[in-house]
Length: 478
Image 1 (cartoon, one colour):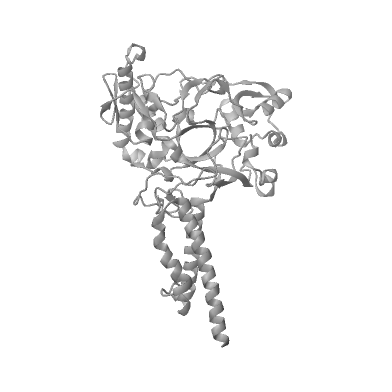
Image 2 (image 1 turned 180 degrees about the vertical axis):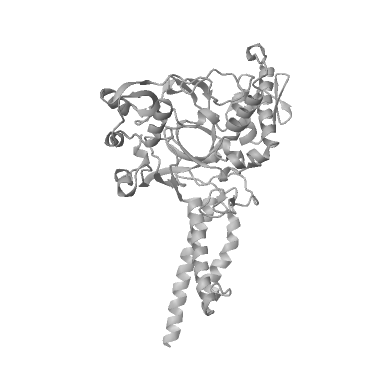
């Protein structure tokens, strides 16, 4: 009698667990709009109610089998849980470089919300958790490219807002070479190599018509790419990565879809109005020292060893306005300090055009918006060619001064996605949209919420922990 009562009570508990799990799972399927997941429901039922499948058969085994399988079971469960949480809810991210200093610092660990902008359904679902694209030690791909699903984003809590700090996949990371995976394939490998190989050719771009200039820049790129492809021993194989397996970058969104952006004397203007500069924006200064900067002063002003190394190598260092003012006031340490001269002949986006733009005086450039159309001309085709071809998967040719998309002549294109303009707060030491262009919406990963850990790479032990930064909300970093 007692056993029957226990069995009834146990079944009630199991049914309760099953109903709770089933309701949560069905709500998840409604959220992601994927009814294919219903095939899992019978297995959930079996786990709690019917128990026809011996899911934990190894518990009846003896010796090392039980011990090993208990660890395998725990590991598989942990990996599946981590994969699910990282894909749809949140992920940890570490700041690897100084491009956002002094707003976010090298060594800051971020809690990144996928729900803020809506998580993406994975394009490459078969991947090893806790890896982005490469397995450690064996240096092999950590994902399988089949099946490959089309881009789709689940509804989130909101959209990217102006001046949000955003994590996204590196747009120019679709193609790379094995031996230089950290280099920009288009700018640093193909274009740089092509220009070097063609350096002796006499070229007067001012005497060329638009079609000739367009063809010339394509020739530069093709020359470099052909050289890279034929020298696999030096560069390695040319490889590609799907969107969600490209490197993660973090920058500030300074331009939204449909806005016209222009940079004048390093100030960003949107639709003709100046955008607020970040509080800790940095620019490069030419600094001459009378004596080394004391360590305590470096710490107070947020000057890193990387900044100091830059100064020792070329006489320039990035500084906030506050740091520059403090150094200028200390005549015993600083002999002189002034803004670095404007950098000319930088390899800015678009590479295959003559714009005269610099990193401090750039544009104007219209940021594509979903459903909006742009009139294409020989003057702007270089700007919109990559979004049309690489991100929205059309063919594009320019022949006889006329533009052909998918084989049809046209001077109008309607965009299928929203695009964003991303820049680092360390404005003179940031590879950002000025160098590789627009960030498509399908590259948006998530929004950093707070800093859960921060360690100074220049200091060790407890002195290297930036206690004051722990659990600071990123939205408060303006």
